[in-house]
Length: 340
Image 1 (cartoon, rainbow, N blue to C red):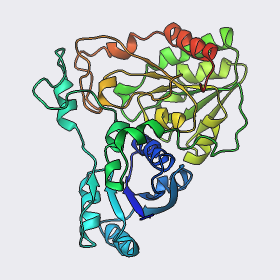
Image 2: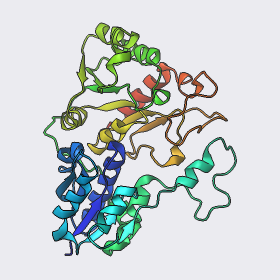
Image 3: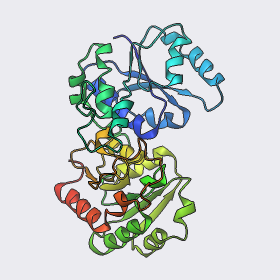
Image 4: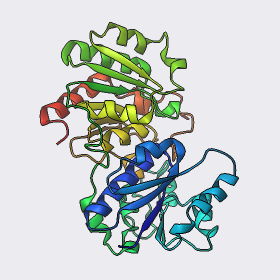
């Protein structure tokens, strides 16, 4: 079967969603892939179902792309899928004197049209049904001779079973996000930890990235975690270690962040808290057991990525999701059977 090369440099959440596509491609009878991604994601991506090898883009300057192209000379005749559609992913095949056989549709205009609008989305644009990022990845499948619907139906968590983590009762709280406006308020997270200690006495893991100690240390969430009878904090761990932790847990409480998609990639369902972004952007949870909590506000969505400061000044979209609502969602998820 002809070789397939897929370019997706990042980010973490998008790469995990691309992993669902690659797993579906192989499960539907298509080729296993060479995946081109950033060095920091390579060890994790090498475990994706449907991936035979990973070729990494180094973290240096512009010369790294040229060096990467040289390493890919032997794959010039593969089917190239540009699953990123950014300047570097467009330039990479051109450095080898060819173009991509198929390229991801960004749908940026669709998402921009949603911002601040309460009317039906994109009324003047064709093909106006909302599509998830996974659907858009699967639209690349005809380039390798498969139908998009067949690959979408076969798509599954690409890291399920990739880690030798025995099933456990532990829960995960991932309170961070790239942008402060996408973070559930720390006081709410602290209240949830206290509620969990009293009414859902599962062991708890709190996952913190490198940028989160500044607001976590000496704050209300840290105090609540210290009160919890069986909680541990994992700070700035390698992605493979975080994935293994998630794989051994029953469920995770997350913001709209990369850890949402990493959790689902290992097969662990989530309670996801969406504030400035919305389901129709295409990044909602995929597992049937997962739950998305959000508020119906006229100001949502207010930003394509969630990076803008709240123009209301009150972050009502997330402030208005109480800890009791998250506890109820988590309890319902566990009662239905996490991972189903």
